[in-house]
Length: 170
Image (cartoon, rainbow, N blue to C red; front, side, top):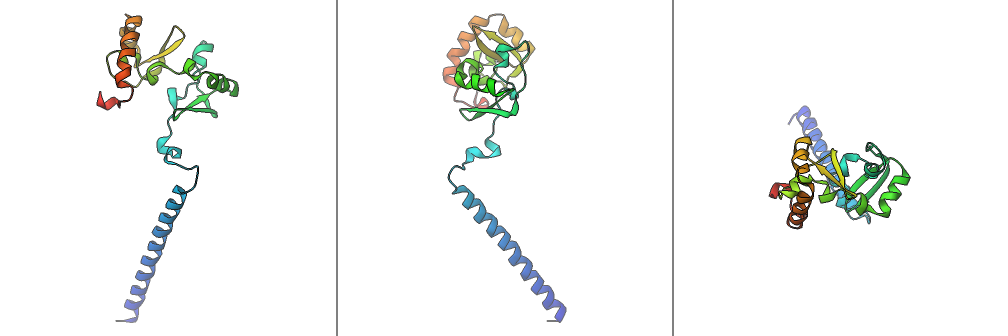
């Protein structure tokens, strides 16, 4: 082996050892982090869900036009983060979340009436008997609006069986 060949071989071994150390230390760090109390899978970005597309749910009831909340005022209900325009609105929501949460988990009200879960658009909403209902779009809302009371009853009945299912399962 020539001097150059042994230098190359030594460099190759050094590089491999260095890469192995980085991989090993990364694995140890990840495993250590998992063992830290208070940190769980629910605390990762992949599990972060913003409800109602970031709208402050209280503003649907108190303002002429609903407003988007900010990251400065956040409340979490059943694993979903809701944003608010003020600390006062956040406190109002937390005092009675059921009053402000949209019906059918925020899915399209008409979709629920036909046994489906369609992602709803919070800009297409109605408040009926002090309950917030979202719909997929204005065309679907027009269909839903032809028999709101009947569609709400159908949706309530269907929701009992579809609430725990993924939209893709329906």
